[in-house]
Length: 360
Image 1 (cartoon, helix red, strand yellow):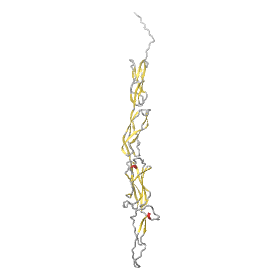
Image 2 (cartoon, rainbow, N blue to C red):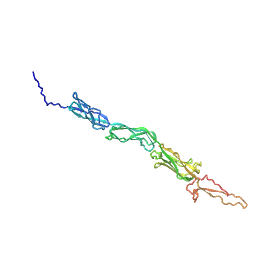
Image 3 (cartoon, rainbow, N blue to C red):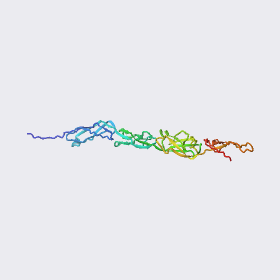
Image 4 (cartoon, helix red, strand yellow):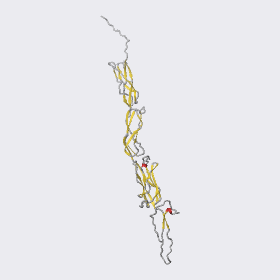
């Protein structure tokens, strides 16, 4: 009964649907970037509309608590380029980035004794986060500077540039008992101040250890002494401690070459062997050769004869042809020969001298 006419109106309005994209609380270990593995929460879309997964990021990459997480990147497929929705990104201030644990581990190392605990080997470092760099490589040191095996090596000193003064990392330094310090080869020598000397005269004997050995507490001077056997006979001296002379250890003895054991070993002889025997060698050093040796010509001591016996004797009568004559002489060490051009100041043992009287 009715003819119906539909009349359109052009003032209708559809407003954009408001939805929140809310960042979620999350904790991660420092990895050098601001990314988060957690997806923000998106309020429901209308039926038939679809979306991607938005992301959320930390405000900075550095270690901290109470960090701001910001959501972004929502893309809606609603046939209207997403304009049917008014999207609000809601931040979250409960983010956390914890420190990244890395190990710096000492490596096996060996060196000859040099008086210090340094090691030329570089410890191993677990990988850093992308973009971070090592400013100062770590070092490792021996527990003591002295000779030994299975010595503890301790790493230290790693400096990291991570934009946060290295505070994004928790560094664990791992000690390894893989160190070896071997004895340092050094050279022992002995010298005399003259090539030849008279028996009973004074001579200076010098023992020396060379080889660039650093002289440190506990070094060779702490345990070394030296004696000087000559021709197998140890001189009447107290063993002499080695003294520091630059990078050398030196012991000297000055004295007279006198027989002390009455064995005749100090008798004059060309090419007599003088040795320096190093006692109680320190384990940090290998002395070669030990004992060290040189040659010394021991010459006869100068002595003089002073005849003090009868020089003229009368017989009992003009017919007597015999008389008792006393022959007597003093044997003088050269020091007692006053005015003798060959005199010296070192008196010798002349008790083994022999005198022959000749009737010419």
